[in-house]
Image (cartoon, rainbow, N blue to C red; front, side, top):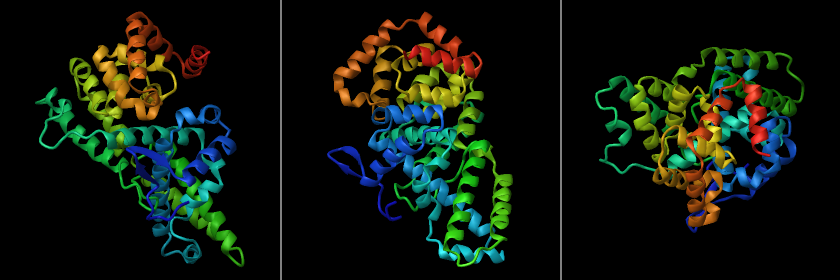
Length: 358
């Protein structure tokens, strides 16, 4: 990977361009990681789903999360005799090693990273000017529980929009099962890295790292993560407030809040809502927007906002106009059927979604 203080990407002509290493990361994902449905689709249509900007943002999240976990493990082991082995490794060893061991990235973790990257990429590009009251606040004045949760969500989202530096750390506010996955991935890389550098194997090292990993997992609190806070916001709203706030959440690029509202109202898991928003199928986006009552003007705004992650930006204004025309033809009956399909058992919903794409 690039040096820790080197930005992962640079601005040129107003558009994000990935670095050479970003391209290698893309090829690596497409060629080496083919052990899950989402990754197989990624390999098949990588250019459309993983723009240079998305790849760069994803690498920032992966690096930041791994840096944090690695530092936490090393701190926990600082008084253990086995800790001396870490002096042989460069700082940020795990986030460098993962690019040589991409098969360690599970489909579920990569899917989550892609969602995080989409959220942060769009948030970076959409900022409410100072002094202007967001409609997310004005539509729920007097709802203190919601406003408190919204303030917490804003702080958590800011964590996702940290500096674009590979040696920075990012608070690992992952769902519990994904945090487990990440911790054991970092632990395995550290075990192998230390073993490769040691002149003689240390039989206590693996056990020491495992103990530190188990302690880190035991202390993890997923309730303070951005997704949990978004759900807290949605649950604090009345049904009327949810429908009033949902369009503004989208136009202000607050994808997590919108997804949590849809989860409350439609019974679709938050991560599935995110996938529908940023995935390859316009039909999924049409259904979400129609279910939440967005008009044509709102659909245009949302399509424009999502363009950097959906690839719609490549088609310019004509593509946005075509999107709205197709949205106009997508009626409420189709949206309700889409919603009912997604409320079926996950395995059946996945198969129906695959049939829809044929």
